[in-house]
Length: 439
Ligand SMILES: NC(=O)N[C@@H](CC(=O)O)C(=O)O
Ligand SMILES: [Zn+2]
Image 1: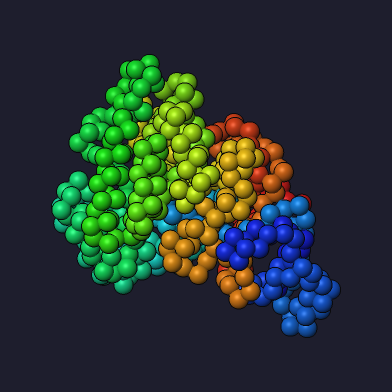
Image 2: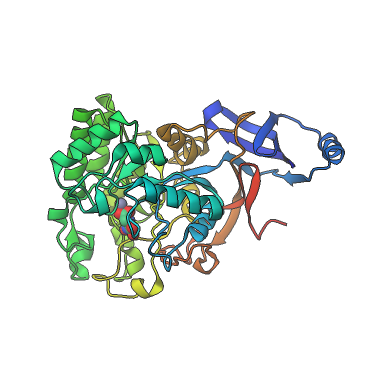
């Protein structure tokens, strides 16, 4: 199979390439990146070889390395009514993602090599994007007994995370970090002080008062962020801070980087797009963990993205059923979907608003996650696997949750006007997504 993508505006921070190029894909691989590739010649070659030839006109479109999402919830096994590997990976592909890291808070939890193998086997059969599993830190995410770190690594995990919870036993977490470091596994840290959060469900402040709901103060996140950075320093672990939402968590990340520690951080589109002032009613589509914070926090997050303190934009795609989300704000589960809105929100809120250059956006959505994972992705170079995304930066439209591939429709962004549409996604040279809007 030969695919020629012509006249696209290529943005590839890894090779420092930005400009108009033609790309030739052969089978799974990027065969050539050149200023001009003759389509007639490729057509003739395809005829001669008897293989299919696809020509894509990418004029005025962005051609980027496929996005890599370090934080998704696929819900399989155990919660297939919320999402499956098939639907979650299709949603990812529709969002321009070619590699995703599913979190282990499934039922059962991904806490053994058998579970990792099961997940990878299912992914092999049903996922349309690459799946790199994250294992839990403790058995059953019970916070008591460590997983077999070496076995999880051998089975194919890229990181350990207790996402959805924190390991509150500091000594146990330190041991987990030591073993992770010895086995070259990353730690993805969900920072939440379980004893301090209490029954909190919304950012503590005007909104928690207005809706008379228990609040979540910034210290809930900041205390564990500080602890985890100090533990990483002590143990030599490579730490990645999940879904940073507060001003002080990014200040501590900056300090840790200055200190030369192996610490990186991610932020999710909802945390830089919305502040708690945007929560006009106790709508459960605004309930997620960590919560939407104050305007001050949002500004600090944007500034940290701009000056590259925050390395990654991830989605924390957290689908739930409509029934679950129609409970009261206090009772509904935390989480919103994000795979299918992340690019448009990032492009609209950060690139168009001048916070990030397009190159920085691609760094944070593709090349930096690849670097953190230590994988040969996030790059448009000859000989690399053809994981690519093509987007129209001028398309203006309204987000419509009914069009999501995800089973989860729990988004606060339904009806929001955005700019930037994913048109095609290629995984290992195969077109896994094509927008209906492409003629
Ligand atoms: N983010 C959320 O609000 N929820 C996540 C868990 C998590 O990422 O903390 C979930 O699994 O639903
Ligand atoms: Zn989390």
